[in-house]
Length: 167
Image (tube, rainbow, N blue to C red):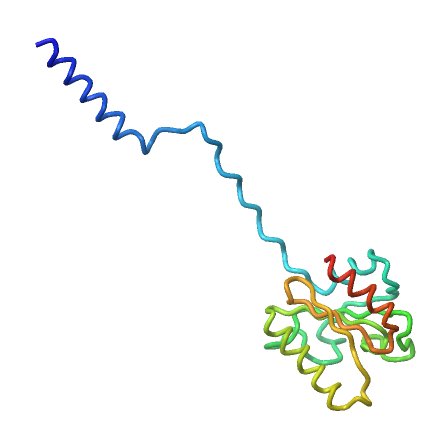
């Protein structure tokens, strides 16, 4: 009889341990908490970072819907923010927000919108070489288009390209 009690106790204990496995705590560490996704870059942040990278930028303004020369700010498929600055080689006599002064930064909601804008600009410039040329660099996974005037020497544009690659 005693053997039966021992066997019953062992069986009951085995059942309890087996059923409780899903709720027992383990000694394994909790998974690391996930960090919040980095906030997307906007034109102001990129301008600040490029100034800090010492690529030769001077001046620098962030456009709003009243100063946006293209009327694309905040519009469907347009950019979400825009900034411009002077670079050596650019034409300082041109409009303060013009690409001809050196550099323009345009941030978009999607990579596709940025691609569309870059292709549009390059298509126009290839079709009408008299309009000049531009260097295009991308940041923030392709969402930000950094445009450098073709008036800027290639060596200076290469410095901007390296700085954008580090953003």
